[in-house]
Length: 66
Image 1 (cartoon, rainbow, N blue to C red):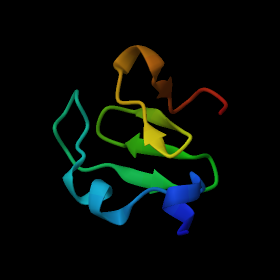
Image 2: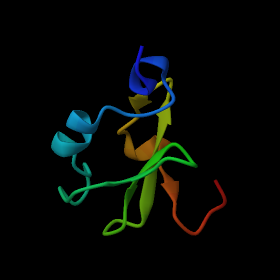
Image 3: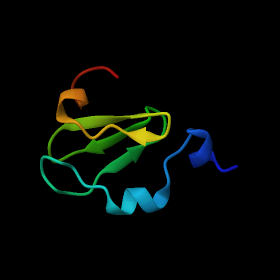
């Protein structure tokens, strides 16, 4: 079983196709915080159980603590 399958990491193939729903730009993966970061929009989307939650209402503003 891979890390992605255990929920500890995200599938690299998924990172290649996901974009920010606000800016449509690429996302950066923050492994430590388990987030996908949109630097252009200034928000981070949580990853729960290996699943990115790509809802703006669930996103954290980058100036807020994780």
